[in-house]
Length: 204
Image 1 (tube, helix red, strand yellow):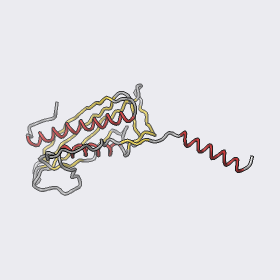
Image 2 (cartoon, one colour):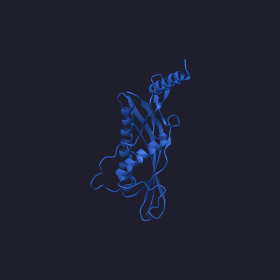
Image 3 (cartoon, one colour):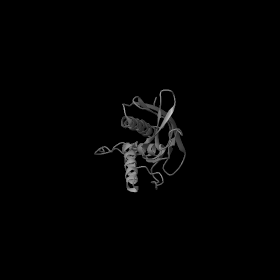
């Protein structure tokens, strides 16, 4: 067999191997942008979002799914576009910006004559069970600093949200997107009511 024949066989083998390799898929928790309301209602405060604390077992680019025997599987070819803590932060921030009618001012100058609401979130559980459900268990803290400084008020709440998921990774990711949206609804309503009436507490 000639050298040329050897090279042809090697090229074919490499080509077949490339075709047979499993492609990598990338996902995001950031839901597609929807049309904003014609006249969004602006919240009575400035808003800043702090970095998210994420459960260490799942805070990595590959998707980590729960299996029936209690074990976890790391899916190397199914990946988040960024570490999960960053994905969660950006997804929740975008949802809250739409509900508050203002942008996240973390790291940006603030108006001195308007209170500032700071949100911190600690994701204790982020469960993914393909074909069954997506679940998030989040402890979130609201901190309000009045205009001109002054005493800081705080409110700490928790939310456990479970969304059904169909077959396939796309359905699982969509369920997580819906869970983040539901969390944003709860936080936005609680924060707005609490700032207007400080006696209000966490939702039951």
